[in-house]
Image (cartoon, rainbow, N blue to C red; front, side, top):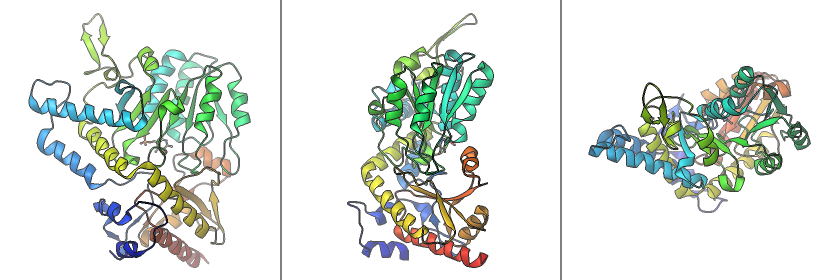
Length: 421
Ligand SMILES: *Cc1c(COP(=O)(O)O)cnc(C)c1O
C-alpha cells in the first residue's frame, strides 16, 4: 500500500482525478507478484474490472438472473430490463440515434465478422475492393481476406510512415479506383498508439459514396466517441478493454444499413415467425442477436460505462496523456531503446524494442519485478513486418495507472539493461 500512500501526498498535475480512490475500486490491483507490488501495464490486451462491475454481475446471478425476452415471469422481466438498460447505456455512450443501432456480440472480432459476413456477403462482388490500413489488428484483416476469398474481391492496404501515421494521399488514391465497397480502419492502433484521423477519412470515403467501419477496440477506453459526429456506418468494440467483462462486444451500425443487411446467424430470439417454408426475422437489434446472449456480461458492461462516465473520458484522457508523456521522456533516456510509433496524435501506450534483448526476455524480467507488459506481435504481424522486427514490448496505460508505476517500469528496464550488458 506504500504506492497508494505516496499518491495521496504526491502533487497531481491533472484536474479532478482521485487516483487513490480509483485504484481502490480494483481489487485485483491490490496484490504482489513475485513479491513485488503488481504494476499492470497490459491494458491494451485487456483492462481490469472495478468492483462495481464485479458486483453487478454477481448481483445479476445472485438475485434476478433468467433468460431474457421471454418475460412471463418476474425474473425474466427483470433480466430483460437490465439487459436492455445496458443497451441504452451503450447507445448514450456512443451517442447513437437509437438503441436499434446497438448490437451485442461476443467481441470486436465477432462484430467485424458480422459485418464482413452480412454486409460483405450481400454487397461485395468479384472485382470489388475493400480498403484497410497497414496498422490493422488481425481481427480487422482476416475477416476481409475471408470475404475476398469467397467473393473474388481484392484487399487494398493504406501504407503508413515510419512515425506510424497513415499516408492519406495513398488512401485517397485507393478510394479513387471506383471499385471500393467498404473502408475498414482502426481508430487507435494497439501496436503503435496512433490515433487515426477517422473523421476526415470518413469524409473522404463518403465523398465517393463509400461506407466506413471503424475498429474502436482501443479507442473507446481512451477517448470520447460520438458516432453521429464521426458519421461512420459501423463502429466495433469489446467490453473487456473498457473495464467490462470479457465475452461481450458491441457493433454500432446505421439503422438503414442494418435493416438492409441479412442476418448473420440464425436461431432463437432473431425471428418473428418460423415455418419450414419461410422465416420472418425479428426487428433490429434482435435480428442480429441469435441465441441466448451473455446476459450478465452485457449488464456488467453497462456497469462499466456508469463507472467510467462518473470519472469522465476527458479526465481519463488527460491523465493518460500525462502518463504517456512522462513515460516517453524516461524511456528515451535508456540507451538502445527505440519507441515504435511516434505519431503526433498518439495515446495510451508505448511500444518499444531494446537493442540486443528479445522482447520476450524483457517481458519475463519485468514480470519478476512485478511489472506486467505485453511482448509479441500484438495481433498485428504486418506492423512488425513493416518495421522489420519480430516483436515489440508494449506498456499500455489505463485510468488507474500512476507515475509511480511508470517509474517501476523504467527502473525494471534499467535492470534489464544491466543483466544484458
Ligand atoms: C483487441 C483488439 C481487437 C480484437 O478485440 P477482441 O476483443 O479480441 O475481439 C481488434 N482491434 C484492435 C485494435 C484491438 O486492440
